[in-house]
Length: 441
Image 1 (cartoon, rainbow, N blue to C red):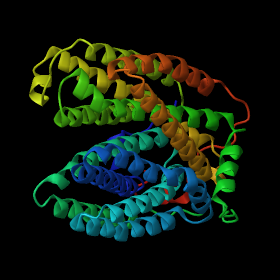
Image 2 (spheres, rainbow, N blue to C red):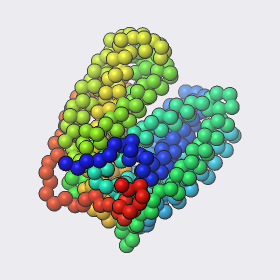
Image 3 (tube, rainbow, N blue to C red):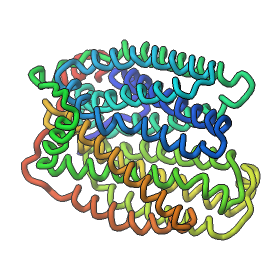
Image 4 (tube, rainbow, N blue to C red):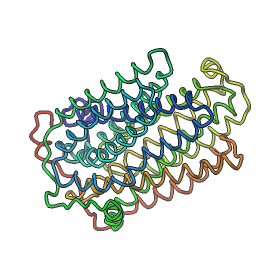
């Protein structure tokens, strides 16, 4: 059985921490900008705020559908470290534009900047996950993915909560400074990422974005091990997006509470995903394996159903103190953390399997196909959640229904992922930088 060092020890290696920090700064900026802008819009445009939030979400996710494939082609053709440096360099003027928008209170500037940040994030995704197998040994791959997943969710939470600061006195200045500072730190971290040779210098970058998107998705489908890992990862993001979308209604209608409790629910969810992601590597001992995925899928179902059921009991929990003083409040929080932790245990092995199964020369394009499918699943889930809400289905009942759907979908995905497919299309390799770097031991 392959053994790996602890995830925290791996995080101390230069092969991982600069990439992790650079990614975390980007995730923080994305969510700081998006949520501060939505908060500002809700204050400025009143009842039209919900429509503005939907438009902002669409502007941010559209580049994932349109440009992930191009990002994968670029990441395979050129040195991934060089690509990261250019992408992170672009983040600084983008957050400068965001600063101007916040200081001027100009929502148009902020919307255009959000689309630009979405383009940057779509191009960064393939190179980020495509680089991990070049710098990490196979026994370290699950641990590396766990660290990245945990850091991503924690910084998403930090950016989301920090966005509300924009409504405080001098909040615009604080948000503008935080965004710019984070972009500069992310750029500095990117300079410390070890070199990585191009995976496929002859790869063609096709600027027909629709044709390129179809091509990268279609190319992965015959690689059944990678394909089912992608479907499973997309389902994880679908579950996460659907659950988080229910938080405002859950807090307002079922618990009789407000924004502070929504932030508490977000914090519990992010903590749970982080804990599950870090635990995944310890349970698998470095093996790139789906053996824990069925149990994680079952855990997601149980905790999701009980979260919905506990929320139906009718307690009035108006604020964080009331939640923490109530047995029902703790049941809801523990259900949410358990659900999220099982989500981390579900997603991290699938990410590692996708990277391990991808052909070395087209690994970034495989990740690009994953990002396209993630975006498609999340757009579909947003439509379903909106339809259920329009039909009058309460958040607790929606969570119970989601638990039932997850039992069928996630366990089915786990079964396909664990099937011993013949003819693996690729395997993780260790680049020279992983074997020769002084941090590589």
